[in-house]
Structures are given as structure tokens and as C-alpha cells.
Amino acid sequence: MDKVIYLDNAATSKVDPEVLDSYNQITLKYFANPSSIHALGQESSRLLDKSRDLILSTLKLNHHEVIFTSGATEANNLAIKGYCFANRSRGNHIITSISEHPSVLKTILDMKEFGFEVTVLPVNSKGVIEVNNLKSAITDKTILVSLMAVNNEVGAINPIKEVGELLKNYPKIAFHVDMVQAIGKINIPLDNVDMFSIAGHKIHALLGAGLLIKEKKIILKAINQGGGQENALRSGTNTLALSASLAKAIRLITSKQEESFKKVKILHDRLMNYLKENTDKYVINSFYDDNPYIVNFSLKSRKASVLVEALSNRGIMVSSLSACHSKKENYSDVVYAMTNDMVLAHNTVRISFDKDNTLEEVETLITNLENIMKEIKQ
Image 1 (cartoon, helix red, strand yellow):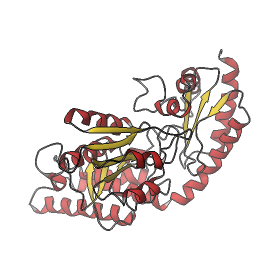
Image 2 (cartoon, one colour; image 1 turned 180 degrees about the vertical axis):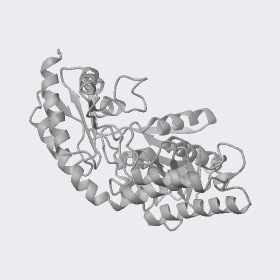
Image 3 (cartoon, helix red, strand yellow; image 1 turned 90 degrees about the horizontal axis):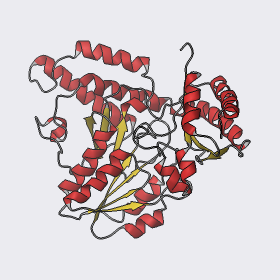
Image 4 (cartoon, helix red, strand yellow; image 1 turned 45 degrees about the vertical axis):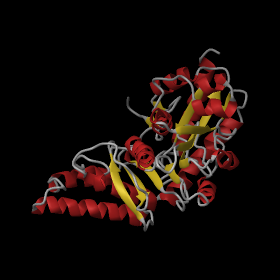
């Protein structure tokens, strides 16, 4: 395939050459185990500490600590299980939403087996929770609320600031936020957020790199036992090059956030205008101009899977569902929750942009959408 137009950046992003260069250099120079007490090991340990400091300073956090993980799935599991198991004497009730990533929703639902009660909040027609519904769900047994900042399928932005302000009135409740689709893209106030998760491969770092950031006062229980690395919360030899290059990726994407947003907004607006001009064919599922990175729409009378395959054959990569469950399920949970329409939920298309995409690529996408929609049968 000569020319590829990649519009599936919410699934994974291309590694930044600077980040890859850092990874390669660190792998060769700092190969010693950071837990070793000899000189080379201590050099590796100091670089690991510098990486933590760089992340915290980049995100302007003063009372937090960084726990490196293999990705956001592990980070989400550690935040949820670690907090609930460490604090179950304070309560046994967890609140989340129906639109969460499986690594949050399935983990929380599994906590029922350990005696925890779970409330799964609905989302409104724009794909976000209502703060009043959250407030009504809180009981004297509630100890954790876990919500995603930005939905990975439709790009909906949850009211994280408002939720954080509400939860200030409930000191027993910890607030965990999945920041995977927000970090370096959308300004999400982290005031009153106790824990949040990041995945490296969504921000041009390498696969296998992730982290959980938590306030120091938050007590977690390790969910895997071993040598006690990562402040005894995530045992296993740290892959220093992954961690250090992730710190660099966070610094790079954050420093270019405003510039990237403006570039992507132009692409977003062009595609949205096309969709709005063709409401006989498409139903738009993305409503937030503050998040130009994800555009989700449903086909009214065509199969999304056929369209996605046809685009792929023409070198244009988009998705019909989130990569985290598209091979197991054939409809979008969040679109169904928003619309209560299974036809629309079965036929979603997600376009997810990056700063390196161009207006020319969007025009090519639109041209091919027009042609393919004429070719495929209803």
C-alpha cells in the first residue's frame, strides 16, 4: 500500500521519532536494573526518579506520585482494586458510568464478587453523565467514583471539574479519572482528582508504557506481589526506557497542545460540515467542539463494517468501534446508551485525528465516503 491515510489515532498513535530516539539511547546506556545497588543500577534509579519529576512538573502537580505501569488498563485496575481493597473498612460502594472503557467498567463490575456494591450511571444524549444523577447515587458506603474524562468512542467530555467540586464534600470518596483520551489534547482541571491514568501509545510513546498518578495521601493495596518496586505498588523490574521515554512524550505533547488543537480543529470542522450537509446518510454522535480529535457518526442505511473495509482497501484507516472491544462485540455501547437505537449503535464510524493529519487527507476521506456510499447496497 503506497499511501496510507491514518485516521484511527484514538486506537493508537504513531511513535514520535524523538521519543523513539530517547528509548533507544536509554536502552543502550542505562541497561542496569534500577533496583540494583551498584553504581550502574543507581544511575538507572536516578534517571527513573528524574522521569517521575519531569512528569509531575510538566503537569504542574505538587502533592502526587507516579506509578509506572504497562499501560492504562493496568493503571485503571490498580486504581480501582488497589483503592477498594485498601479502604473497604470505610465502605463498599463504587460509582461509575455505562460509557467507561472495559478496563474500568469490567473491573468495577468484577468487584461485586468481593462484596462491593456498584452503581452504573447512565449517560445523556450527548454521552456524558449528569452530575445530579451522581449526587443521588452517593451513599454513606460510597468510597470510589471512577469516570473517563473523554470518551474514546464519541469524544464526549465528562464534567470532571463539576464532579470534583461535588466530591470535595465527601472526604471518604476518592475520585479516579481515566485521562487516556484527554492528556495533551483537552484541558481537564485536575483539581480534586485523586488518581488518574495515562496510556503512552495514545500520545506518541511506545506500547507497553503507562502510568497511574495519585495524590500521596491516597492509600492503595498492591494487586500483584513481588519485589516491591514502584513504592511497593507495582512489583516487577521497571522497563526504564519505556518510563523515561513516556515522560518525554508527555512533555512534548503538552508543550504542543495549543498548536495541535488549532490544527486538528480545522480538520474536525471540515468533516463535521460535510456530515451536517448529508443528514440523509449520517447521524452525528459527537457533540463537543472542545474535542476536535474524535468524530463519530452512524450510517442510516449502510453497514459501517462494509464502509470501514472499503476505506481500508483504499488506504484510509478508520474504525467502526473502539479497538478495545471491536473483535468481540458488534455494536457501540455508548452510542446505544445515547440513542437507544440499536441500528445506529451497530453502524458507527469513528474518525480520530492527530496533529500530523492534513486537510488534504480529510478531503480525500470525504471524496471516498461519497463514492463508497453510492457503491454499497442499503
